[in-house]
Each structure stands twice: as C-alpha cells, then as structure tokens.
Length: 343
Ligand code: NAD
Ligand code: UDP
Ligand code: UDP
Image 1 (cartoon, rainbow, N blue to C red):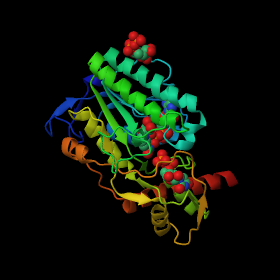
Image 2 (tube, rainbow, N blue to C red):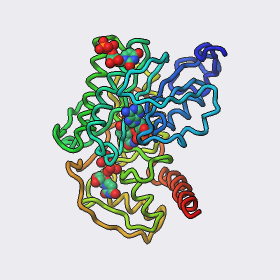
Image 3 (tube, rainbow, N blue to C red):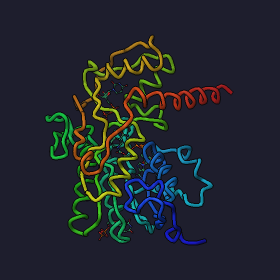
Image 4 (cartoon, rainbow, N blue to C red):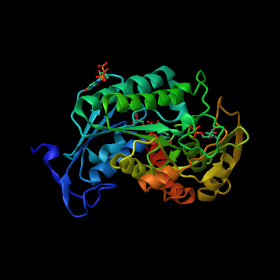
C-alpha cells in the first residue's frame, strides 16, 4: 500500500488551504485525539471528506464507537483505543488535541483523571508533536474565563477562575494546557494553535451528559419537565457543531496561533433556551426549577472579532436553525433505545 502521505487529493474541499482550487496537494496524516467524541467525530467526517488520512486516539470515556462507525471500512481511517495520559508513538502531520471530557457532569465524575488528561495528556501530545514536528491544535474552552467580569469575553481577558473549586480540574486544567502549548511553541519552536470553544451542541452529543441543551432536548422528547438550574437568568451562547468544526479547520490551516474564541455570539438565558426548546419540540413542556451547581458562571458570550478578522470565520447557524437538526438525531436515538430496551 502506498504510504498515506504520498497520496494526492483534489483541493476542492480544502478549508482554509493555500493550494489553489483545482490543483492537487499531498494528503495529510491527521491525528484527532478524542475523535470518537461529539466534536471530534464531526471533525473526522470533514477531514476524511477533504481527502486526508485520520487516526483517532480515544479511550472511550465519553466517546462512542458508534460516532465513527461509518468510517471503519475506510482505508484512510484508523482508530486506536488509547489513553493520552500514557505516551504514544505515531507519525502524523497535524494533531487536533480534543481528548478531555467536556460536560461538567463527566469532568467532575473523576476530577483527578480530568486534570491528568488536561496536563499529562496535553504534555504527551505536545511531546509527540515536537518529536515528529507536527502542527498542534489545542481545543481549550471559554471556561478559562471562569465567572467573567468582562462581557462579552475578549481573548485578552485573563479570566476570573476559582483555583480550588469543583470546576477547577477542567478550567484550571485547560489553562495549564494552554500554558504548556505556548511554552512548547516558544521553547521548542512548535507550530501551535489554540481555540477557546464556547458551548457547542448538535447531533451525537451524549444524551445524558447533563449539559443544558442535551438535558432540555431529551426531557422535552421524553415528556419530562425541563430542569432549569437556579433562577434561569444565567446566560450562555450556543454554537452549532458544524460552525465549530469549520472554525477549527480554518484555525489549523491559517497563520495565527491564537487563542481564538470560537463561539456563536447569540446569547440566551436558560429560560430563553427553554422557550426555544418548547417552540421546537413541545409547547406544553413544563419547567421545573432546581438548585444551581457550585461556581456556575453567570454569563458567557464570545467576542469573535479576532476570528472574523484573522481567520475569516463566523458561525452561520443560529440556535433556532441548529436545534431541530439535533432534535431529529436525539429522537432517533432515544426512541430507538426504548424500542431496543422493550425487546
Ligand atoms: P466529548 O466528551 O464528547 O469528547 C471527548 C472525547 O475525548 C471522548 O471521545 C472521550 O472518550 C475522549 N477522552 C477523554 N479523556 C481521554 C483520555 N484521557 N484519553 C483519550 N481519550 C479521552 O466532548 P466534546 O464536546 O466533543 O469536546 C471535545 C473537546 O472540545 C474537549 O477538549 C472539550 O474540552 C472541548 N470543548 C468542548 C465544548 C463543547 O461545548 N462541546 C466547549 C468547550 C471546549
Ligand atoms: N511523548 C510521547 N510520544 C512521543 C514523544 C514524547 O508520548 O513521540 C511524551 C513523552 O513520554 C513525555 C512527553 O511526551 O512524557 C513530553 O515529551 P518531551 O520530549 O517534550 O519531554 P521529555 O521527554 O524530555 O520530558
Ligand atoms: N443548566 C440548567 N439545566 C440543566 C443543565 C444545566 O439550567 O439541566 C444550566 C447550568 O446551571 C448552567 C448552564 O445551564 O448555568 C450551562 O450548563 P452546561 O452544563 O450545559 O455547560 P457549562 O457552560 O456550565 O459548561
């Protein structure tokens, strides 16, 4: 078999590429850590579609084989069960480093494991990138801004984070991951990219991951009340997954390190989100108030001027358009599951 990197592919689908349209370019070998997860699996779809070879490294903590099942027979696709906390030897051109649970319920489940994934896992992937001279992209998070005192959040804002709270394994973990990434950039001359991702939703999210969009959608479909935590006046900005994947690829292929906020600036209170879910699924869905979790950020909205200007990127899909796409996926999976359970 011809080595993957000797293949030529058309440039038709090459997001952000510098090869003129219609010409051939060398296929890339791309590693996606966490590629069996929600965002990772959508990214894998796009990379394969573009003609590149993809290796997924995932320990299946929150990811599922189902998410990438449709690629298993593709010779350009490979999946390795591996925990990034352990070193690994691979040869690739680019690394998208996503491995890390993203939902608060998942990352608080084993906080020590979460911080090890963020710190040791990121260190290993940076060490790998350095040895093979691969381009490295870190998926950081809007959580690095903590409970922000600046609104909307700009990349130059340093954040307001509790270092000893229940969310710290994740937000301090990602802050350290950013530090490591910049230190390998400055110290080892590694080519790096940092994305700060804001709340993202779409098909393939874990149904019971406890995040607000997946909770509300699953609850409305199951005819259960929507659980609003606290007074429901806290805000978030919700981005559809295809917009994020486009942003990540433009960032990787572009000339700028970042960090870049990647998010949809449309800001909603949790009560407004509940209303959108009611309008989309069931106008009669009830609302039930629950106690909020500790250290819950009061508001969050990205300033995306930097990404607009330097990456030529902005999200295209507003919440009311993206939500129905996720609802049909959840409907299939929830009622499919119930049928399966009944037999
Ligand atoms: P996800 O939980 O669906 O995916 C994470 C993937 O990483 C899963 O497949 C999981 O099995 C894998 N993983 C976790 N720990 C691992 C380890 N130690 N070794 C190997 N694999 C491991 O989450 P997602 O929403 O797809 O998030 C992907 C990335 O984007 C994460 O780094 C997350 O922090 C970041 N992010 C996501 C959002 C969002 O709203 N979805 C927001 C901000 C940042
Ligand atoms: N590493 C890895 N794969 C590689 C190269 C390195 O997993 O191909 C790991 C390595 O085990 C180490 C980490 O990445 O724990 C950092 O590597 P680096 O070479 O930067 O640091 P050092 O090994 O010198 O401490
Ligand atoms: N939330 C809610 N009901 C739920 C789950 C979450 O009201 O069933 C709230 C939560 O308190 C937070 C917001 O929704 O204010 C977003 O929570 P999520 O866990 O989705 O993501 P976060 O942005 O906190 O990481």
